[in-house]
Structures are given as C-alpha cells and as structure tokens.
Image (cartoon, rainbow, N blue to C red; front, side, top):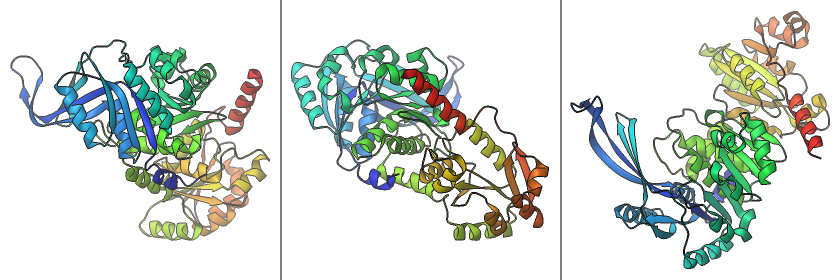
Length: 471
C-alpha cells in the first residue's frame, strides 16, 4: 500500500472540474425560548445566520479546502442568493462558470438548541442547458482537468446535452448519480452512490448484489457509501471498508466530501482501493461536524494518523499492556488473518471487546497468512488489513506477527482473556500450547460463536463462482 499521507499531501494544486447542481445552504441558529401561541411549534430566537455552498458547490468547496484547484460549472438565478454564491466562490478560491437560470436553488435550515427543526427548499426543477460559450469553456477545462466530478442532485443540471459535451472525457469522470439519470453514466471511470440510491438504481435490496449489477451495467467501478457501515468498493475485488468516524453527528454533505477526496486521491496517483480508504477518512471527519462542512487535507492526515497509532510494535505493546494492567484494566487478546473483513469478523471482534477493557488483536503477517491459508492468500496486504481493523473503534491495539501461532505473545503480554472462535472447544484449547500458557498465569480462555456461513474463504469462493458465470 502506498503512503496515504504522501498521497493527501499531493492533493495540492490538482485540477478538479466539478459540474452539477449548485445550491445555497442557509442556516438560522438559535435557542428555543417557548412554544408559539399561533401553533404548537417551537419559537427559535435566532442568534446566528450564515451561508455555505451546497450541492455541487459543497463538492467544489471540499476540493478547495483539501488543497485542490476547483473549477465549478453550474446554474444560478438572477437573485440575491446568487450574489452570496459568487462571494462564497471567491472566498473559497473556486473558479466559477455559472449560467443564469430562473432561480438559485436555496435550502434554508432552522436550528434550535443544536437540533434541526425545519427546512425550507426554494427551487425550480427542470432541465437546464449551458450556453454554447459555456460549453466551449467546459470542454477546455475538461481537457485541462486531472479528474471531472459530476455532482447530480436531480435538479436539472445533468442532462444528455451535458454528457454529450463531455463525451471525449468519460474516463476522467467520477459521478454521484441520481437513479433517474443512471443511463447517462455508462462507461465513466467511477460511480459513487449511497446505499439507498444503489437500491433504487438496481431494484435490489442487497448491497453486494446491487454493487455488482451497477458495475456490470454501467461498465464502471463502483463505490457504495453505507453511512455508519462505511463503504464497499466494487472493482476487481469487493472490499468492505468500515467507517472511520468516532461519532456520527451529522451526515449532511458526507457524500460530497467523499467524492472530492476520491477525485483528489485518484488524481494524485492513488489506487482505487487507497482512494476509497482516504475518502472514508475524509467522510469520517465530516460526519463528526455539524451541517455542511468542507474538510481540509490536514484534518484527513490527522484522522489517518489516529488510526496508525493503534498498530504498534511488540516492545511498545508490552509497555502499554504493562501500564494498563497497573491501572487495573482488563486486557483481551484475540488473533487471526482477518482477510477481506466481513460481518462475521466485526461481530466476533465486537463481542471480544466486551470481555474486558482493552482489546488487542494479533494480526498474521502476509507470510504467516500464506503458510496458513495457501499461496493465493492474503488478498489484502498486512498493512491494508491492519488499517481496516484500526478503523473499528472497539479495537484498541494491533500487533502484526510473523509466526503461525501466538504462544510467544501470550507468554510476554499475559492478557487477562484469550478469545477464540467456537470452531474450537474449551477442552481442546486448554490442552493446546496456547491455552496452557494462558492457564499457567491464571488467565481466562473464552469462546465466541462464529456467524454461520461468513468467512473469507466463502467470500472468495462466491467471487470465483460469479466470475466463472460471467465468463
């Protein structure tokens, strides 16, 4: 895996063209002082009013905030809201090509006591067409761009005419499509959809099936964002990436943030997998913030460094565990390959974390995984597997180890609880060298049931069957 910090540092100056539905988001914030005498509704004493770019504007704002050079093509009305948008574009250093339409799309949110109470939308939804002069500028900026983002909110900016204008640049395009426009995006570089949109696009209710169907029908790689469940990448492999957010405060605009980070990471030379990981970190920053929010490159790097602190060398882990034990903390240890993380893994690890105060996960190195699982494994490198595990908030520390057994680490760390899956028995474990070591210092051995039918081996088998069927 490439150094993702270096990739984010390379965001600076990357040229990202954003085309789509531009909006103005206005927030009225204050305290709820009483219930109205006119109707059973709260009265908000407004103390603050502020405006931010929404829709495609929020994508462009995130590109700029992350260090990229954003150019935005969209529509505004001849009204006061458009004046605010032009001011915000200047403040964010975004180059804007905005054709005039009947009305600027405007969303007004009322926040009382830090809770959104109401939203008013002002919009006229109809197909919009850029002038010939604007289309000429669009083609020129598309030619110069490293990546093109289409931000589709189904408000009329995305049309057959637009995609025809960009036809020569399809393999530069990342799109966040609305279901009604799905047929416009065949053959582009990447589709990013949220889970609900993926289900609406395909008529399916299973994420894996929906992602594979979108990839096949649109002839493009696919990323499905899944809220608290992170995201799933559909490319040569299907990879689940858990969320990196410690607390989900507000999901507004998280998809825009992920879209901007994907574009910048890909333009900086990242693989699609690394780009998805970086985008997931960026979205993790956003959902911890209230309202529409542009994430910075520094925040992404900081978020990534938080996760990296969980992956430690043995000598450091020994010091940490010793200190925690002195403070009366109960240490839980489990270990495995954890290749292609799936729901069986996450449920198992979450249950393991409940058996004590601190969960330490021993992770088989690439070489030891190969010895245990065969020459075609692991599918993901030890660094990739460690980073994905580190994103789970109930895992505290990760140790990558080269052996196929863990007697050495149990003897050195002496965890209070040693956890294994229920494909073992307690009697068998206590007779095993690992169990004997745990018993020798008074530790406990615990079993956690596996989720039936969920394993990396089964997943790999399904992928092979599906690929054979496609052939």
